[in-house]
Image (cartoon, rainbow, N blue to C red; front, side, top):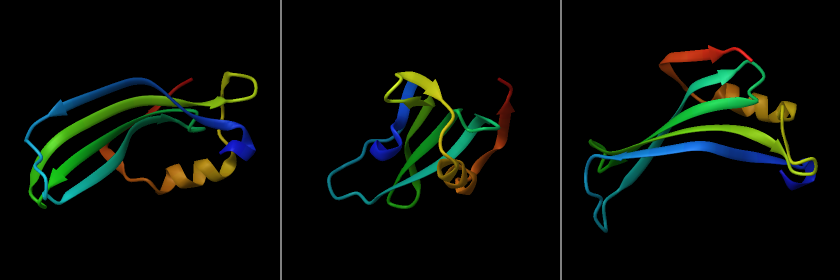
Length: 99
């Protein structure tokens, strides 16, 4: 990302804890896109933290965007980021948001 002078920026992060995670638990994190603009310049994601394959331990919701690190302004990401985002699973109620 440094060579393209861009990176992610978070506007909001919320975590809801549901179950305790103990040392030795096996943790898996599922990530899905909740919403995004068509150009992927702004987006929302949900991370579900599972322990031992069956217990939902936490749900993390974030809203973010991309920033041009030279200009210090919000920006549309390079094309390869769009391709990566397209491969990320989307929630059942995924929302394509307008500008």
